[in-house]
Length: 457
Ligand SMILES: *Cc1c(COP(=O)(O)O)cnc(C)c1O
Image 1 (tube, rainbow, N blue to C red):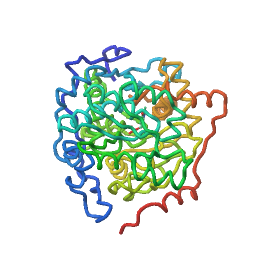
Image 2: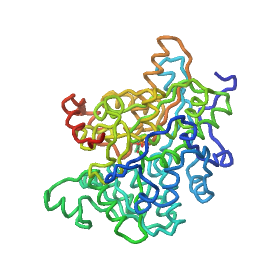
Image 3: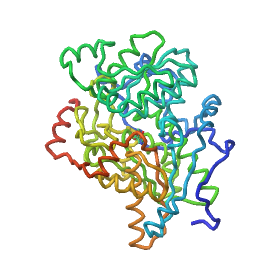
Image 4: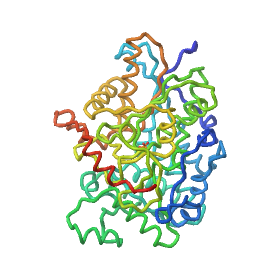
């Protein structure tokens, strides 16, 4: 608790913006198990990854020892257009809940792409440009990652091709329009521009596509095009490294007022915002300087941490990536189509998975209607229309605050508000007119996903 009056928004100046990303692996006594090459099942080497990812990012991916990695000036320049992001004291939400807890949220939706994904997009495009790469490929499902990357590519003058899951490109034409406005080429996937796309179309001409298929097309294009690389918006260690800017800023802002969070909460899809938000606080915990709790919140319909297995699995449905040891539902797991709340990825960041397996992070899951209830309450109190993904963290924070109301504890709760929900209004409409339903996979549904795990002894 603090004796200074805490403003509703704690802003940092440009000068106070962190100059370093924090690499939490440096403070983890045990690192997560290495990626395995899918053909040899031997640990991947940096050379294995150079054809796919640009060099500096591969080096960051393998760097488990450097605690602080300097943010290049060319990246800070872009960050300054939308960072430091505000840390907000949710006075109105606290009052509505009648809780003695202090609730803070870090708002990452304050840029056109509407989410935290820009923090890593900028870094990845910057390094590719520096290396002489002339074009990038990626996939996008809901569209936030593709939009963030389009913005970064426009700024650094890099060509970009986005393979967008065909059904999403039909359902979210506005997302496609934003990406095209920033100069990206958006190709509905599967497409006839790649071998794998043509093969899938020949087998199933009317398919709406999948993220796994879009990843396969993006990787194929990257490895068969001169000076072209592939980029990924979550899951990998270098993405979590870039996202540590979120946690670093939180810590500086809280330190200014002598506030120490007791509970830190983030939504978890691939784990990048959660990993970035908790990173420096987890560092303190690993070094015995804090006893904060960390909570990952996921949808009940895609429960990688709470019901998944800690196993080696492919990162994609096309089985093209290295094998990652992670909490997973199996690469063949498909969340129910009526799940509108995002966070649909079958696996989880290897860093988050390891910390969870070591008992350093807790996890819980919520059904989507309860998440939209929380989103609606939050929007009314705090004025921001939250992304469905972010609303999982809101729901987690509300439940913690209500627990404090029962016990009378004045805990300090910090959560990550990863983005805004303007492109998710179809989901809000379904919630408002009560056609939104909840779906929890049965054990038999999960078994079908686990059956797609690669057999490795
Ligand atoms: C992509 C996304 C997420 C989930 O991704 P993580 O890698 O788990 O952070 C959460 N919130 C928003 C707004 C997103 O766009």
